Image (cartoon, rainbow, N blue to C red; front, side, top):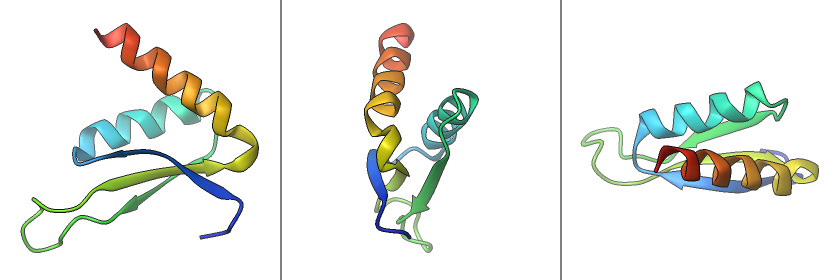
Length: 71
């Protein structure tokens, strides 16, 4: 992965990761997921979401707003 991408979110839930990625892309932010889960058991490890360094603050704000709206 290029060095100008930063990790903005991590989760063990693949559905949550896909939703976050989709919300970011709907808001014009290119997002990349990196699945670090164990391929045998699927119980260990995390799924990380990265975005371009220029969009980190906006992406974090979008994720925060999404979390508040779900509560």
